[in-house]
Amino acid sequence: MVELLAIPHRGAGPFVFGLSRAAIAGIMGSPEAIEAGKDGLGHREEEWRYEKLQLAVTFTEEDDWKLSGIAAFGANCILNGVRFIGRDIAELHASCRSAGIGDLQLDDDYGECGVCYSCDYLGLMFWAVDGYVTTLNMLPRFDETGNRICWPELTAFPAKLE
Image 1 (tube, rainbow, N blue to C red):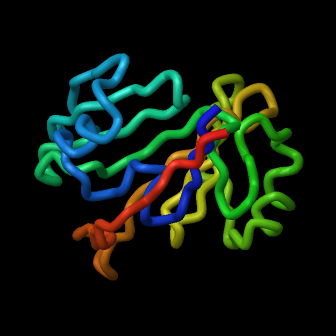
Image 2: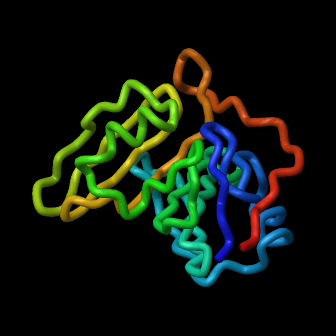
């Protein structure tokens, strides 16, 4: 199993915010699925799913088709030394503290459909369904206005193989 080391505002494994679709395809090959659509503001976007890695990445036209969102849904994703996916939601706050993630807030409660906890200053969202964390969403850093992405420097970002 490939471990994906996640770094807030940077990415997960070889998936670094700011990379183009061509760069990701060159590094990782073609995704198992591509879903095209529009985001909540009507901008065109593509979600590329790498099922074997239990990860999806999003590219948006508004961001010049650069990688601008990551959703990890497997326990192979490690954030600050912690595997969040599959953890009991009752452990989320303690797990975040041990990973150095503070200011965790309940963002949305969708009842039976799940809940979302977020840490805005790190661009993280933890989704839980039926009492367990199912997805970790990551976003790049934004400037102080919240309107412009501050892309990370694009340097080597390895995936660890087991």
